[in-house]
Amino acid sequence: MSASPSGSSPEAVALCRLYIRSELERIGEQLDDPLTVFLIGGGAMAFHNLKTTTKDIDLIVASGDDIGQLQAVLLELGYDIIREPDEEYEALGAQRILENDDGCRNLVGQLWTNENRTAGSATRSK
Image (cartoon, rainbow, N blue to C red; front, side, top):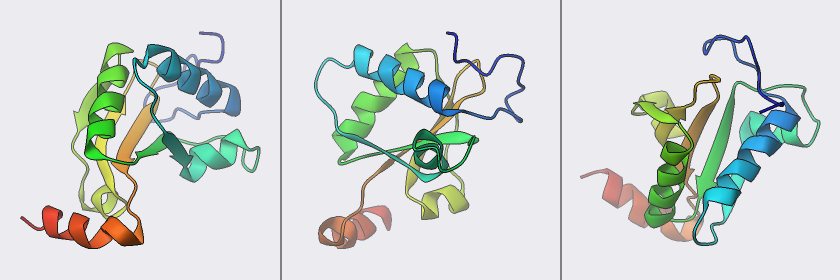
């Protein structure tokens, strides 16, 4: 992949707009069913040229089923679940942290709106 951050260690990888676009296209090509994914955080800023690089790609989906679908595609593309989110990432809504051999880290979470925040909070408190 030409947009890959070659030569970078996983700890120091910096993702540019071209690499993010390339990864999103790879994800889209692997999907069997349509999936709405929101790119947020530093990845969204880098994608829109508001900053030059980011350390990870934050992807948000609408439901738990969508998280499963996205995670399955990322695993097919060579990403590994590197760890479950710690409290800091959980507070941001991250539910999975996956990383590929390039050191590209994807944080996957569910979109919480005002309508489902109460239900989601109750579900999380179990």
